[in-house]
Amino acid sequence: MSQSKICVYPWSHVNINPNGDVWPCCHQRGDQMRVYGNFKEDDIDTIFNSESARELRRSMLQGVLPRDTCIKCIEYEKIGIKSARLWANLQPWAKEIIDNIPNTTKDDGTVENYKIKFWDLRWSNLCNMKCVMCSPDWSSLWVQEIKNKLENFDDKTIEKENMLRAYKQHIKHDTLKIRHLPNKQFIDNHINDVEHIYFAGGEPLIMDEHWYILNKLTELKRFNVKIKYNTNMLKLDYKRQNAIDLWKNWDYLKLSVEGSIDETGKRAEWIRTGTVWETVEKNIKQVRDTGIQTFSNTSVGCYNVIRLPELIDELYELYYSPTNKKAQVNLNPVHNHWCSIQVLPDALKRDILEKTKSWESKTKSKTNKIEAIYHELQKPHDPDKLKMFWKRSSWLDLNKDSTLFDHIPEFAELNDQTGNQYEKFRDDWIEKSLSKRISSTNSNLCSSVSY
Image (cartoon, rainbow, N blue to C red; front, top):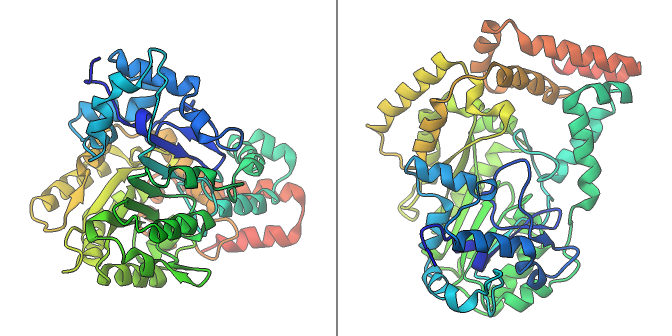
């Protein structure tokens, strides 16, 4: 057995998604995801040794990382960034599992006597925000937002517009999403084996199942389990419980609360719609000052890379304290075509790259994976992506009291340089909505994006 292409995840990990699909991990990319099985149709123990799972293990045992599943790790390792695979193989529980693969794994890839050590739980799209880079797949609020917006357009317009047609398909699939687990057997069966849990969503802190697990671990005094959160930091309490009261049972290095914070102030409130910055900021400080490990997970796209050094300094200052000395700003490039860094013109990206590298040589702020952002900044500008940015941004701003430019004023100059495409798309959306001849809607659409 060659260990050079082994990833411990297929032997120890499940990633459960809002529609019930179970993936090898959350890092796979592509149009066609590898799915082990579906949590609504089969139990985890059946899914863990499905044909798809066994096939992945066989490939790795033959020294092959399948590109259709592992492309993100392959590309990261090419440019010298520690990939999720390499990170996983360094976890305390990983060595024993990898060393025992010859004893636990049959020729067909079946694993016997396995222990699922790492749970990545995103089993509901229940959310209290509708972030611009997100979709109905991951946010229940996006479902209602799209339904409301699509009401402004007739069926013929929706069918002709690729973007609207895709959104319509997305919300059709919402009925397949899990709102609450039908039973908690998986949790109860494996709670004594788990070593690491990642809570995401949706928004985990408004999910019943999250609180069931956290209370179960507390009841069993399993404070050695490493817990990591991806949360928007809008809410810390739920049904008369406060997360901090339970989190305090874990040692500082055993539990981390990672805030999905991509901007501050008004900028944050456009990028992650539903953000109340005053509340989010207060919650971050409360967690930080309690002595709980917390830092920012920042998705970097065209909308915030334009002031990346300033943003990192602001976030680092917010998260750092004598009780949170491991604070850092984790940087993850956005890959959605319409809001990726490649939306920006090459000259602007060169300026950002030069400014950020100069800043990095002087700053005391700590970051993680800034090399990935540099890599994205060096990719060529894509005019089609910029066009789609204006088109989608103007659509997102319909029926709002403010616009992209009110929150992120730097884009006003770029809009001027590109022939005021935002306004052209806005006017086109309004014109297309007139086919429904609902005067009140037309009035709202027009007034909400006027200057």
